[in-house]
Image 1 (tube, rainbow, N blue to C red):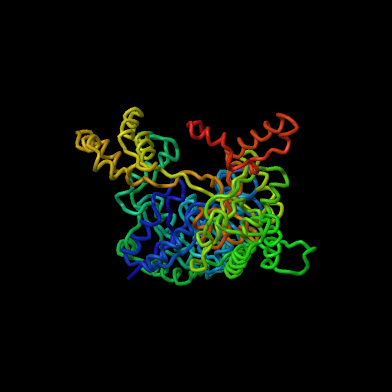
Image 2 (image 1 turned 60 degrees about the vertical axis):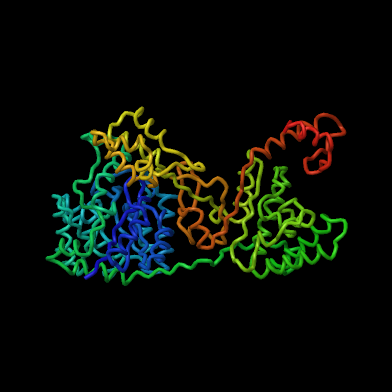
Length: 606
């Protein structure tokens, strides 16, 4: 008989989960599991990576989250109550049954970061009730409301919590979890079985998986030490009481629950109920507001008008070659449905220039478009320089255009603010990035936890070669670098531990950041499409990294803050102050054949 793990933490449960998504999915496939769930702590950071990885491996992905729950109306309070109080934070596993459930989970996760963050991203039961459609709830771990009440011996609180969750989810979509890790507190889970029978509810077996292989339990323990800034020798630190929080095989789970096989069967029933179908390649472009003065026309016609007007100002004579190129490009843009993209880009570049914000002349493949040149998106003549449009847009390869736009470094944020005001604050956000443990950092962080002196750890990292800006992996380095091989062969076992644990933990996410340039512009509230995150500075980003946000059809624009443009702008201002003859000086109008400039280049004075 098979089994499905419904309670799993990847490394996106930052500094708590030690599982790489590819590894956990491959392990599930090797165990012939038909499905697998992802339920990271309070976030959906890895949901899209997980979904696509499962699809590639032929396993049903079950999207979920282990949410942080507080009492009704309490998610905005800045109080951490004691257990049994409404302000106390509890865990609750939420799984998406269908597309509506996925949208509701995106919304709940977004609200928890935007409005409910206090130590953790929190959801209250009023919100849970509002967005419960399409969701299945499991009572979670010892931090779950019902199980924790059992642990405290507070049966009245456990019953009240069960009744609240039944009112929110109904009896068919609310399950009591039972976990068996061989620890004293497991007795609290067994109480769930009798409570479920009393209320006519179902129970389900889970394992609260935090690492893929049983052998990784020490590496996970080191990760927990990193989270708290502790050494492994510290007595007063967080630790998991057993080495059983790994991805057990179906056989192991059924042996563990040999007295109640129906709890394992229930995992298959729940997996059968979960069917989220995410559409890829369905572009979600915002509607560009066409000026009323243009009459009732669509984006295709408005782009044509803007391009034709721009063409007349760009060229003294519109030759047949220029006209044919324009017609060809407009037909391809219309066919691919990207007229709005050009209009949106054109508009915020125009707005920047109106505000005297320096804008780059254009770079990359977009410089090959005469439509981009005519509408002011670029200032490079593709006819003169014989640039290819097909490098930018190719009807044989359907993909979103990608225009990198450079702005003055000091004033880039003004352009983003303009876009927010035009399309709506909730419709525009930035893109998350993740700081991961690269090999050298993995060695230093693990060494600190193992009490290896910093100087020694630093010496080890200096032995790791870097290729094209990327350091060699820990595993490869300890196999190929003679000095590191010698360390492994020494009598000191701590270096074997260092290599082993740094290898397991290399690449795990440990922090979030913001993409240097990417900005999402959506036709609707972004959180209706993907979950969003709010960082400590109040900046809203997607929870999905760039490639995964784009994969679901979101429009990503690159607003690059370029120091060079700022320097050029400052130089222009200084030159204009030299005298009346320089007041109109612009870098864009300087001669391209100035002999004195070429003499400087010839002398190496660049």
